[in-house]
Length: 431
Image 1 (cartoon, one colour):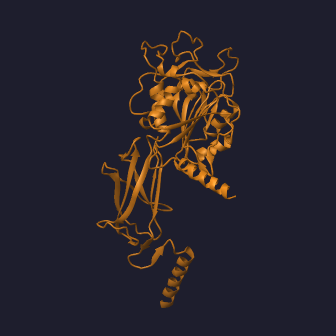
Image 2 (cartoon, rainbow, N blue to C red):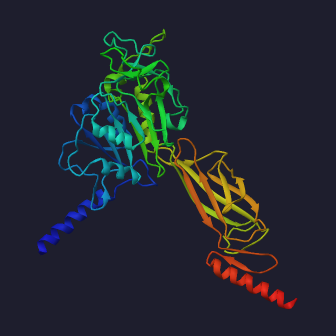
Image 3 (cartoon, one colour):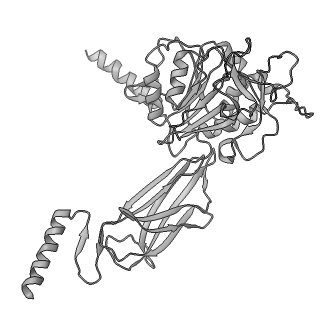
């Protein structure tokens, strides 16, 4: 028994650094990524994409989907901070990984990339549906575009798409313009209209449709035009990020290095936009961009520096908070003009836009309203592509300038009503 405990303790001491080396809000890029493949050849055929992640400091752990030892967590701790599913045809995962485990992984704040293709299994489709998108139900369908296809000597069915319909967001796909179209070959998907968190990042053209390229259309296709999403992203309410696409090929070395000419255009690019687009998008997915943090939330009377536990009606207050954005290597001041603070009790009594000093400090001053109650300073900041900020700080007491009655959160509603009734009785007796 003694030997067992020695072995057990030794094992735990070895595992603890591994288990604890997970995503930290202070260093969002210090991350371990599990990459699940249904074919080890993908590791070499898509090496340019994987190498771009490694060069930015990511630790990739490659495993086949049927590995019986696959696990996302152990001893209640997650082993990885992100998951890449480059396994379109997987019917069942090995180990303890299944749909529920993957959804729980995301629900716990971790990131996910899903790349499918024409061989997409029901399992991959189910995971995508759970994330808010639906691949075309026809298992033989591909995205076809007789206008927006890539000119090719070998691809004559117009399933090799050249798309440049990008989301208008520098924080998601980078500020440098992507000049060349992105090559896509695979299956399209639609967004679940109920899920407001899903965004199309790369859309098909109005002339595109989803159908079997080997047969003639007998019925109108269910997916057509710009409603077809080629690449979509999700930022969950817990700030976990997801990328979903129906083209594993778009990550391949062949597509990265291939020249591209869009039909109807005389411009021929020596290199497609795939590498730039997917590299920049991965920076957003893995929180190297658009990741905010708020620190040093303070409030005090104007002219003072110490936070007060007691404010009176009509006092002049000052509220401040520091906001920073992760640059990939360090925290830099986040500069914008649309952060607001609410002075809140059931509804905002004061709503002020915070001014900033260009160094990350946001502040505003205002007068305490002439209203009894327990208030909160609230900042609810949501902006396309950025992690949301939800800050709340309760003010402990408010004191009327004339009655002297102390109203606090700790004072129950019952005792407050009793006090008010007693005062009314006293007033009536005196009259």
